[in-house]
Length: 360
Image 1 (cartoon, rainbow, N blue to C red):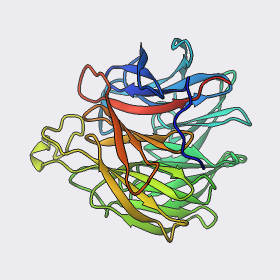
Image 2: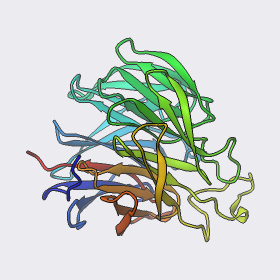
Image 3: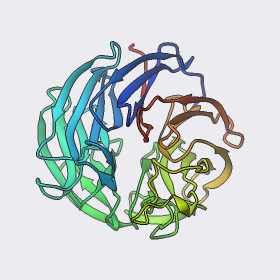
Image 4: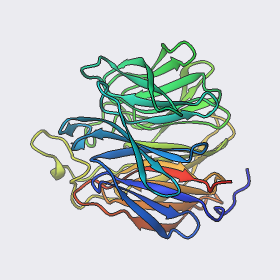
């Protein structure tokens, strides 16, 4: 894959969780093009290139996963070119929508939802053209969060913050078919060839991790962990820049005096917290991946993506509300080429991301 500069006319979009807004930027110049106000607690973004719509999940009415003011039941829809809010999808009785994935061939939109009045946590399936909810697939876990599908659109993978497994779904049968043991999990990413699933684990409970932190590498054909890339601290976002370059966002645990009365470190209210780091791994297979570099980024990296050409990594750090743009043309010498502050009203800031290629 050639590592090129972003084409003219491309954009990227960034959520401000407490804005609550979605900001659009020119992908080449990083000039801010628009800021759109949306309902409370926007989380993740997804771009549909066929309709040129941007979907945004709204997980909570206030707060965050471990301490919220009630779960939301909406997905908002924006026009990528006019930057206008064009629709709101009601997911009720399913609530806590979060992870988004698109099957462009079958025209299906997937969204993870937390457990609640409608039953166990799972994934709802929508018609991507009519935006009608078609069905729900249970993942048999209370807190499914990040979700993706394989290149064929036949398998789905859900990381579950609380449950001790990753859920594997047969999308043709709309059924849970396998559970991969995991000590709670955060972000996930599938290699471009679909052979290796990378999962950040355990749940990033800062200062009280339930297992050694690291990225679990899963052979998708075998459905099992074949290797763990051990890290010094909790990890959350993870992405593949190419078949042989894996990028991981590591969170640095702040001083323990940031604990609240429950003994929990609120990632959005930590004071004097150290920044996170981006870890770069290179290798031809899960067995040969090795860390070649790291670079400092903002406080509590939470969401990450790469540009279509594979040259740039975008990582949003929610506690400092900074989006770092990292050039990995040379993976062994990554360079932060820009840091963009994402406006916020309260504490939590930059979160979901989407890259929006220009219309052909």
